[in-house]
Structure formats: C-alpha cells, structure tokens
Length: 198
Image (tube, rainbow, N blue to C red; front, top):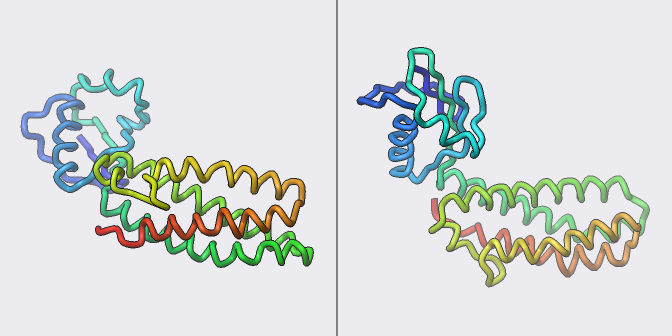
C-alpha cells in the first residue's frame, strides 16, 4: 500500500488496519495530536467527494492501494494568515491611489490594483474557510470587534458596490468606497491576524 500526504510519500507500518476507514481513522488520530486535519482524499487515483466518503470506508487495503491525503495544520494556517495580513496591508496603501489614478486616466494601473485586491481578499477568505476546521481557533478570530465570519459577511456588500462603481466608471464612488469602506477593513483584517500565535 502507498500513502502520500501533501504529495510526499509516507512510510507506513500497518498495525492491524485492514480497511481504508481504519487507515483514515488512525491517520486522523495522529494528525489531531499535531493540530492538523485532512481536507481531501484521493483513493486509487480518484478524488473522493463527501457523498462517497461512507462508501470507501469498508474497502480492503491491498498491496496496490494508494491513498493520497491533503492535510492542513493550524500552524500552517496561522503562517498563511500572517502572510495574507501583510499583503492586505500593502494593498491598503495602494488602494489610496485608486481615485487619483482614475482621474488621470490610468485605468490599466487601477485594473492591476483591483485584480490584486480581489486575489488577496479571495486568499484571505480561503484561509478563513479552512480555519473553520479548527472550531476553537476559528471562534477566537476577531476583526473589527466581530467574529471573523460575521466581519467578512458584512464586508461583502461593499465589495459588490465597489465592483458596480468600477463598472460604471463612477470615479467619485470608487474613490470613496476604496478609501472609507475597503481600506479600513483591510487594516482590521491585517490586525486580526498579525498577533496570532503559531
């Protein structure tokens, strides 16, 4: 049998495990000791969706069985959050230039900033979603005096308004939303994760 974790081969000695379910249970027990959890399973080259999970548990372990697991650890999430926070702070500084750039016809530069902003916010959301796999950790995440889930939910309408103002080339509204709504929230997101302990 072959076991891979995050693409790396792992030496495994079976201790009486005869099914895929028993292997996964043993692995998850070890992973939780290290504040880690499995986010994706590929069995014999096939990605296993949530609806198929129960079906594979009873499958026997054979010599040619291959299990490829994607695992995320709390330590890695904290590191990713901090990195994301730094990038959001950099974005905050760049957002301040958007309305000036628009007024001087530098739409291409604005486009670049907006694309990067969308990527950075999307990255932060992805890390936040993964961190919900660690309920205690997730519960402690706060931004702007709210839990992180509520904060991000409240942030979304401003991003939608921003997108609409960009689409209609309303430079005044774009500048106002960038400066008074998005920029302070990026700062709060960065502050929320800056002090996290690995």
